Length: 255
Image (cartoon, rainbow, N blue to C red):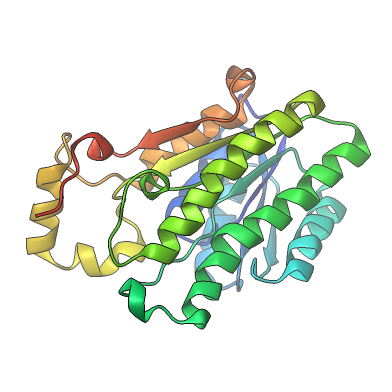
């Protein structure tokens, strides 16, 4: 129970990696704020799993693309839970398009959630920590594509590349405040965002041939690392990206 007494906010925690992370942090003793764009059945499932572990849970609906929602999520979470010690910036989206066809609307949709929203909810979290004179942990769910090309997903790669540099810059700026920040970079993970891939046996076989461990990852593969980075075991780690990709980034190649 390495996180006993801590409160964690996990954005986009109604499903996939976010859901697994929220539950794993609760297993380690944390009370959890479950955030998603809308609170529906899947968010309730996350909350129910946390409650069964004997931890407190609070659900908040918030659209990360809206700065007012970012501020409200932090303020409401603090009001309900008393504080927030750990922020997991998990919410993210992607849009497939040839670069020359990307529209302003598609660009804004991806960047506002993946980078702008992460920036401002992190700012609000840091201001909460400063006002209460406490240290904290920030964990960004990045991607192997902060480092590795992903043709036809230029907006996604740009957002994750920005997240890479944001992490490194904030490690320097926030370190004197006792706040650590690190990125987790998942590779191919079996989540709802990869539904089309999971339903295409031919593409699955091709992708798995590029992964040295020979399989897609699971949300739990990522959640274990998040729990570690949120704990005191990682107290001297900041400004780094940790890949959870079965070796994909070392072996990836186009056909």
